[in-house]
Length: 192
Image 1 (spheres, rainbow, N blue to C red):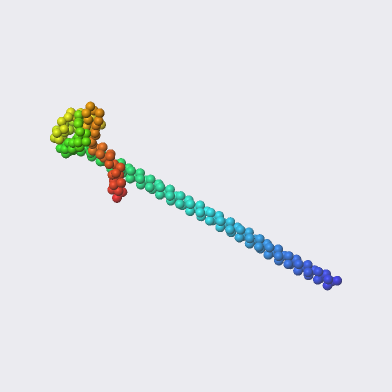
Image 2: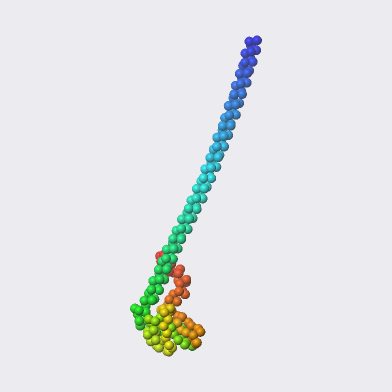
């Protein structure tokens, strides 16, 4: 009987050892599966964070480019405003610094306007230009009354029959008409 007990004990011990081995293998598989799953989750989170970081970098770069372009446009616009403002100042100063040249300019501007107008009843100029304008208009055989008009600067306004029509021909008006077409050239000059 002792042999039977030993045999049963050995079988039970072998079965327990087999069960322990199976349990250890199952536990190792479960632990490995958990590690693999954890590694997969970490990798997925890492990719998601990298993607978010790349998106953030792209947004920040785009924002920086937009801000840079806005500053560049603002600077260019500011430079353009200063350039046209300086041109206007020089046009306004032209008559005071060069009376003979300004008289010739007034004559040409009046002559151009008269050709378009046909019958001219009167001419209007800035009050400071009355005397000079009368001489200029006489030099191109435009014999009409010359009236003061403070809103006319650097040129002339001719008034048609019965005062119903008029043509204004001034340097400042010409500058304003070509401003949009000159803007790209001025911007190119300002930006080098």
